[in-house]
Image 1: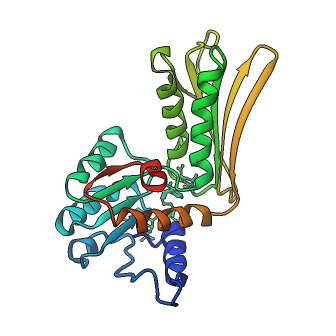
Image 2 (image 1 turned 90 degrees about the horizontal axis):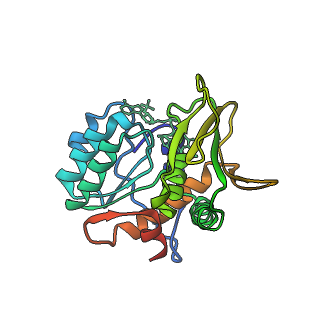
Image 3 (image 1 turned 30 degrees about the vertical axis):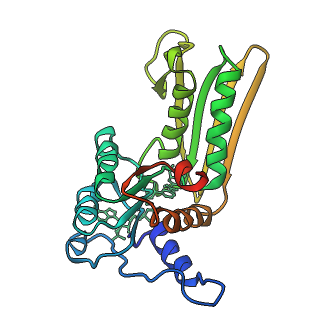
Length: 240
Ligand SMILES: NC(=O)C1=CN([C@@H]2O[C@H](COP(=O)(O)OP(=O)(O)OC[C@H]3O[C@@H](n4cnc5c(N)ncnc54)[C@H](OP(=O)(O)O)[C@@H]3O)[C@@H](O)[C@H]2O)C=CC1
Ligand SMILES: O=C(O)C1=N[C@H](C(=O)O)C[C@H](O)C1
């Protein structure tokens, strides 16, 4: 789904993919843009790939419930309630959501969890940079990285601090600063910094093209279509 930057690249890439005998790997049933009414009559597919906007969720959910198509969702900007709705869709079909489909960000998440455990007492700050057309902030990836830090030390009391305008008083050791930069054509840069006394560890993933997200989403689609109904994470689909 999606006629935008990601949707168009996913379609073009899927159309160019063949198996060893030259057969097309994907049979694209429809590419749907702003008019989500199209989804109410769209034919059943094995998988729907959704990179669009959070406001399309009810139409996407209705399509999955009607057809039982597997859902690869990469849309960001969802509320906690909407993410829960996506998880519940797993009752009807195999469903996955990730704020980032690149293999490099999967590794970044794992490294961030390790650094959080090995650097107790360090101040953690998360910074993401994206192109000037992005509509949501912080990025879905930045929120996932925040979740990794919190999950790595659940007893620690880590919590997000979104920007610092209007703050008076020094930094709370348990706050995790979340910062968003927007400009130009940046495909996506995420840095998690751990600041200690007289030392700093910063872990950065730099996307130089959207193709990495497309390749991950198409690989995930092939794997997810073979799964039983349920909600799956990126790591479960790609590595288990
Ligand atoms: N998880 C990941 O790895 C990645 C996630 N993303 C996420 O994917 C999403 C799309 O990104 P991108 O392709 O750059 O964005 P674009 O703005 O280029 O495309 C958005 C798409 O969503 C559709 N859309 C927007 N609003 C609505 C609406 N109200 N109803 C129906 N359709 C709508 C647009 O349709 P139309 O063209 O008709 O306007 C278009 O097809 C974002 O949430 C982004 O954060 C992006 C890259 C990687
Ligand atoms: O909107 C984008 O472009 C991207 N969005 C995702 C996010 O919000 O994390 C992933 C990637 O960084 C590109």
